[in-house]
Image (cartoon, rainbow over all chains, first blue to last red):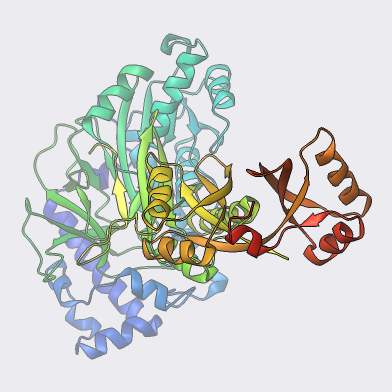
Length: 434
Length: 145
């Protein structure tokens, strides 16, 4: 028997959903126009007034929003309510070290909790379950997002956060976790560590896992399900839209249902901006029609995906998106963290005495993503003393780690060993299998 | 009184030493002494050669990362205990040794110790006060030892 968190919305008739979306959209566009100068200017430039947006069919008239807009309005320029009404902020990586800041009112937090609650319920999570949250807690939306979603469902939440894998496994066993949330690669890593510790899947009570924050394949899903003895569900989100919970997988496991009563999706041609019909692959765009503090219009996610509205055996009518097939920019996801090669570049340039010739080598060893940054030695960096070079290496390492938010190995290499290219420099070698 | 030592960055990769010394071979450079400081990923090859400027230019032309450091070369009798005497003398005078290596004379019973120290001037003064030979550039470039 399929359980829903919000049956009325999740199984709404398509025309009812469209009416609701149209109503919410027209209200939201007015709120944004009147409260966010940045958007008012953009709309005025295009000669669009809020009254021109009466339904979802008018969505294409609105301007797009891109990451650069968020950087240009850092930190709170796109907020649509007074800061006094903002009860939470979160942040994620920007391409050059400036963070992307998002905010929530109490009502927004309520929306978020419900979106995650839908995802948890679709994965079979119920009030009597024990939720093991192995996402990072902090400015990252993953940890707190799933945490509050699980609390909303009434589960017993175990906020383990990241790290200390042996302890995590002991807690899994002793505290009786039944549902786990973490990145898919961490799930595999946990499975392997369990094996090393001599703990079998029969020794733990896990029945399901909700995995996201990085792309993962069907092969990985099969492995996770096999090794942990659970059903593995996908969840998608980005902090600019709300965090995790923008879309979620159901029992059919053939794509993710988008919470379209809150976030209207579109697929566009990344080069022309033209809206593409259902079934075609393109860049995923979202419009927030219920959030108060930080509602974005037609935000270009840079994720490449396909939208499909077909009958789902789970009974939900919410439109589905297929797993993102890649990015239209150069962003990488390493151990669940967004990384832009240009962030490395800005660090090296700031340090001053390093050459601009660098390369990121990304690999996966024992199911854990690894990052090595090769930097060509420059005349200024070179010293007769090993200690001096090592100190520089250390400095690069700590600067890069503080900007990226993850640890990286630094390798100093000889000049001219990083291949030069005619056109755009090849900054990344990603050895991970697709 | 200071000797120009070459320091060359060598990545820990097969063929690098062969390539670097090959460049010296092409340019007819004679190596008098060498040492290599290694870490996991790279090493610094230190060389005393007959013509450091020529060697430096040749290496730079082939994109090697090279620098010249001033070091002191002292000469002592090649007998047990002579090195210890030198080092204790430096210690007594609070001179810190960064690194050292040595070679022996082809012609007589002498040993030469290459020292990188913190304070070159003070070290030279102490050697002279104690009648210890400080080898000059000429001697090395002319192949007299």
